[in-house]
Image 1 (tube, rainbow, N blue to C red):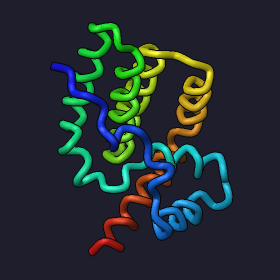
Image 2: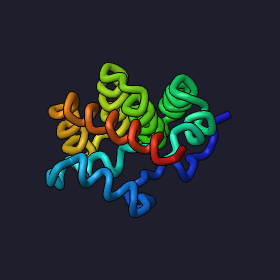
Image 3: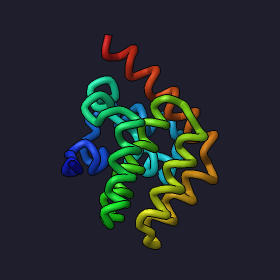
Image 4: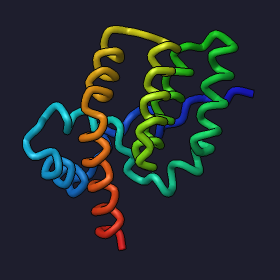
Length: 141
């Protein structure tokens, strides 16, 4: 049975606390566009969120199930969330594949533009995300 979309899947841009937001701003070094992209594609509590979301494989299964049932928008959300997991795990190929699948599942001009921006800057985005997560882990301990 298809699970309903969870709150964690709706994006993190408005949930960043001050220290996370400041760290992201610092790591993006004044690049407001990169900061905007990452503020949406960063998982703030990945160690808690990923197991709750059934992990990467579970998200892909849920997305494919949604597609088979004709729920393209829901599938896109699952694929986007899988891309967020890929970013956390530092797996560029997964991020590319999941964003491509998200676009195929339910394309609109806004999301396509965002995906293209991410893919065109993926190595840099992944490096910033890696720094973000490594510094977040240090600050939590």
